[in-house]
Image (cartoon, rainbow, N blue to C red; front, top):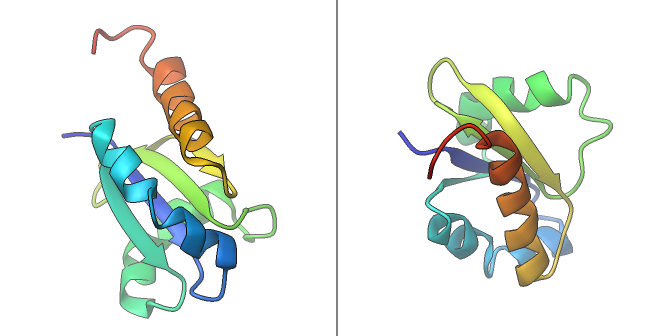
Length: 109
């Protein structure tokens, strides 16, 4: 199963909206599943809340948006890394690749 990028964002966040023009495309180009969780979407948020709370127990240090890269997001998940905040398309790609690269040193992709 591929790793997933879970985007935690708010409908009121301008940077989150700007990132939505390319974050899903970049994640999928890198072979990652993309899951968009808007905090206002209660059902979706509840489904992935435990992942967010594992990384940010009180949510005070999270950025907008916060992208958590994890394995098995619908089951016994394991957090691989994260990217916080808004970035230009190329930098967002580089940051995701950095998380993937630092995690896959032992694996051949």
